[in-house]
Length: 283
Image 1 (tube, rainbow, N blue to C red):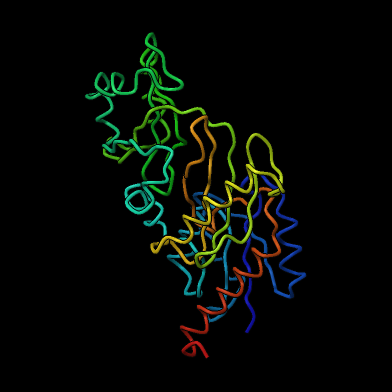
Image 2 (cartoon, rainbow, N blue to C red; image 1 turned 90 degrees about the vertical axis):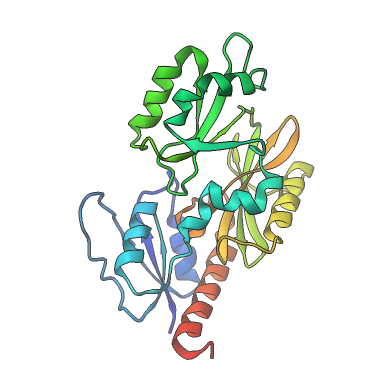
C-alpha cells in the first residue's frame, strides 16, 4: 500500500506544481481535482480502502470527510482550530492575548464599551477609535477586519454580509500593526519547514528574525496539546516582539515558500502510519 494524494486545483493563490512534482518524485500517486461549490461531486479517484491524503479548500475537505472512508483522508480536525478551543492552550503566545469573545450581534450593543477599551491602540486614535474582529470558527466565515467608530454601521454590515449569523462567536481585540508574518509546518511536535510570507515570500534564511520566529514556533510545537498530528502555525512580528498570529489545518493551508520535500515526506509517513494503525494494528 502506498499513500495516494488528492489535490484541489486553484487554491491558496499559489503554484501547486512544486507540490505535485514532489509527490511524484517521492514515488506516490497524485490526482488533481476541481471543486465546484454548490455542485455535488463523487470524487471516486481512489478506492474506499486506500490510504489517501487530501489537500484543498475547507469546503472540499469537509465534503470528503462526510462522504469518504479514506484513512487518514485529511489532517483537519476543524473544531480544534476554533479560537475558543486553541486559545485555551496557546493563550500566552497570542498577538491578541487581551481578547474578548462574544456573539457578532453583541458588537452593536457593546460598541461604546469596546471603542473605549481599545482607544489609543497602535492603529487607533482618540478621534477615531478602532477594534479588530475575527470569527472564532476555524471555517473563517469572514477575514479579520478593523471596525472604526466613524464607520461602524458600514463596517458591521460588511461583516454580516459575508454570511456571518448574529449568534456567531467572534474574537474582539485591539488593533495591532503587524510588520512581518511567517508560516511554519508542524508534524508531531516538530517544526519541519517554514516560510516568510509577508511583506514578501521567501524561504527561511540564515538571519536573526527568521531564527527567532522558528524558535517561537518550536516552543508552541512542543506544547503537550496539539490540534492535529500535522498542522500549520503563523508567527508575526510587531514593534513589541514576536507572537502567535493563528493556527490552521494542514490539509487546508497554503505553504508559500516552504520547502515541500519535508512536507510531502512527513505527511505521507504520518498518513501511512495512521492507515496501518487502523487496518493492521500498526504492523
